[in-house]
Image 1 (tube, rainbow, N blue to C red):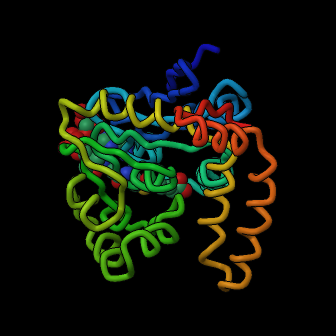
Image 2 (cartoon, rainbow, N blue to C red):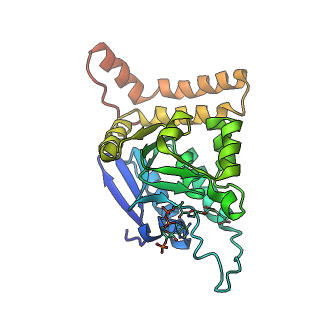
Length: 262
Ligand code: T3D
């Protein structure tokens, strides 16, 4: 599949989507929206892929919506309506509901919807030099792409409101410190750490991981009783999986488990 704005790599159970508009810090134009949706769908349907990674080409991860394409020559803003319904909202839902773990490998600045694209992913790993900016307020917009849902849940109201009302950059170490991302790593170790993380996830019991995502995501809307019931239902399926049998056998035989993801 030849794409203009996305590079797709597939290797050893890992499907990698590289946002590829480096001259615009991988900001979203119409083509990138369409190609990312299509590439994400392709990797989601591919049974050989057990983890999906989203990263950026060049020095940025993603600078959100392409602002150079959103105004007329007179500088009058064109209506961007529709892009949330058509592109951002389905993308965020598809990432959250993906039956595979989705990793954001944040190689550089992540701003606006680019920051919230990263936060929608299950595991966020970032270079020390990467920055996260809820830049919407800097141009008179409201955070979108799920930011107002994710942020209070990740970092609490005080930090969420500060980040979104001030629109200041925070670096990856601070993002890790406040619980916004999984891990910040030194720039020169980033590629190796991302590979190791993805290799590990690709070898985990994929179906059980999908159930785990489901349970965690439902928890905020459930009572404890509802959540216990959901866990019981999901565990029923996990108990009947190949990977559970293999996990127990491997434990008894004192060897590493070889999970097949089913
Ligand atoms: O309905 C809807 O669609 C609304 C949806 C909205 C979703 C959103 O994401 S709104 C938020 C949009 N994004 C931003 O406001 C961020 C804008 N960018 C920046 O603030 C800065 O570029 C960064 C802080 C991200 C990085 O700064 P810096 O100094 O490292 O780089 P730079 O020099 O500003 O950018 C490098 C180039 O990328 C530059 O082009 P040039 O001058 O070298 O030709 C710059 O114009 C371009 N670029 C950066 N961000 C965008 C962009 N071009 C188009 N759109 C961008 N968002």
